[in-house]
Length: 270
Image (tube, rainbow, N blue to C red; front, top):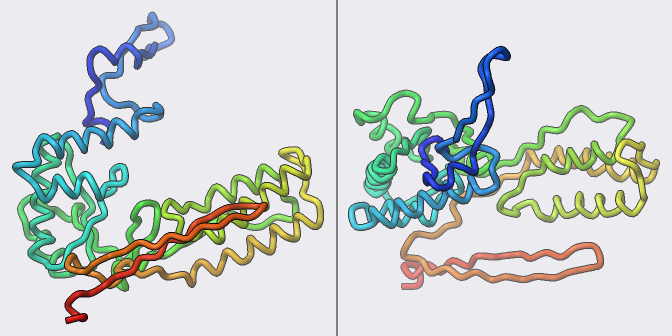
């Protein structure tokens, strides 16, 4: 994605590097002309380019432009619709819109086999474009397209008797939760980190018995994530009315919010 975004000429001076291909040759100065991995602004600029592309081509691809502005998370596109015909229209428009900016969409997947079969027959598709795996990674999460559920899997190294503050923080960082669905679990880990800081332990000092016991118990309970299934579809169509209800609270240790969605189906009411 980054490789297809060209940096303005005036800004390439801020992406200078020195390099030589052989120790015996003089060092040369280069300028990186494309968006570069690792720079703080790169994710923002990449997304901004997609939004700008949507604005420029909105009249030509109105459906794709709207989806581009609302349904992207970096280079992952997550969208849906009510019919197969609409899904194919989205597929065709999104491909055309992205290609107009030099981007190529890949790894299409869906919980609808008819849609996958139809796009698999198009001339622009090949075996690497349509993903038929039951488990797909979406926004850092696992999506089981067969039962249409999101799933969590926590891959932690084998537990050791010697546990340090550095190790705990490293393992807590693996609890990736961009949508906050497992916040009640993650907040416990953050509260435990608070306790570590208050204990004045060094980075590589062993945890005291009480802290160690608490951490190992929490760590063992993470295995239950394998039983957590979150339905992707929340029982609404475009004709339904939706309401968000938000509740928040705090304590001495943490604060959090819970967001509920209320779906009102006008067809059922009639």
